[in-house]
Length: 199
Image (cartoon, rainbow, N blue to C red; front, side, top):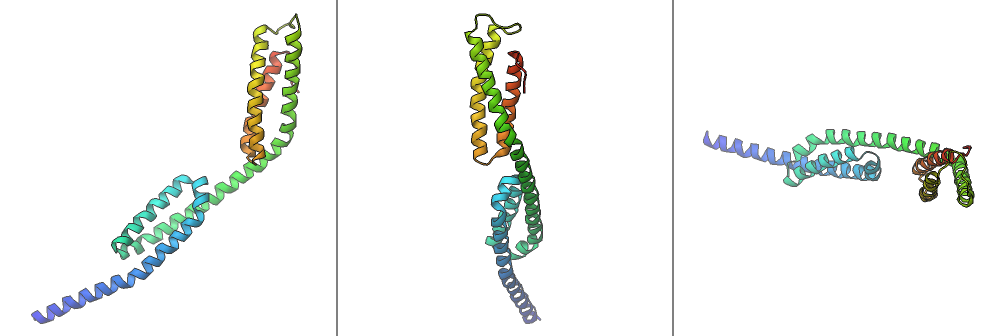
């Protein structure tokens, strides 16, 4: 009887070891496949869905730890959840990338006329400021403080417009139009303060 139970234990142990060994190759393959899938989406995921990217990395690192410990069953058990997370990350990244590209295309359309209109406004203000600076009598509604504020505003607008143009040159039309709109709004306020008709 004792011999039989020893033999049974030995057989069970052998089956368990064989089971573990048979799980090793699929576990290693699954981890390798996941690593490839994550690498393919990493750049876009980091840019467009950073929180999801971090969550996928955390899941994957946990699975790699189990692989290193030889817990192949835990690796294989966790893979469906990781694969679902990677798939979700890909979908979110694709959607956000498409949104960003659509916003950029729209901003590019806005930038075209803006890149002509805003410099004209700035030039008109510069001309007005130059004329008023030489004038002995300021027009009604325009004070020395208003003129001084306009001069300061001109400097900040030129600097901001330079930033907007640099962004547009780099192809970042979303930033370019946001900065350009801020300059346009400021120019309209200054024109009003100087008694000019905004175009």
